[in-house]
Amino acid sequence: MQKIVSLSVALGILISAALPAQARNETFMLPIDAALKATTLATKPDGSVKFYFGKQATPAVEELIHTDVISKKVRFSGTADVEACNEALVSSLTELQERTRKMGGNAVINIVSYYKKTEMSSETRFECHAGTSSVVFFLKADIAKVADK
Image (cartoon, rainbow, N blue to C red; front, side, top):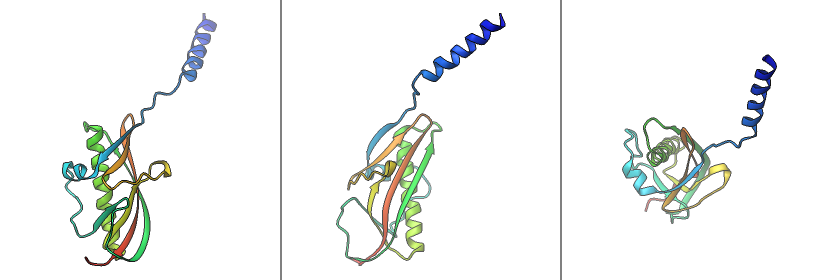
């Protein structure tokens, strides 16, 4: 009897190991403007630093200070995928604003999505990935000092 139970357990383990993992990775391409308006985060970019996405035209770049990569993971807690993605973008931009000020810059330029180190450049959209319990978001950008318009 014990051999039958042991064989059953071993067989169950082998079968479960052979089944493919069912990890979720859904890609969202979301509008930047809508994300900035939709989020309910208390802390948001305040306009003291200008953001330029993709290949948007910028004022003359006086100094390229630093290239930065930011990653965010937002866990679901009753939050929908899109809402969590919007939160990740706004939180990342707020963090970039603070870094930019500390480094003496006044703009963040060439902002691209950077999932798995692959750039996705857009002036109007950002890329976000939703898993089974959280969303992940990666952003790459240049902190710069640009001329006043």
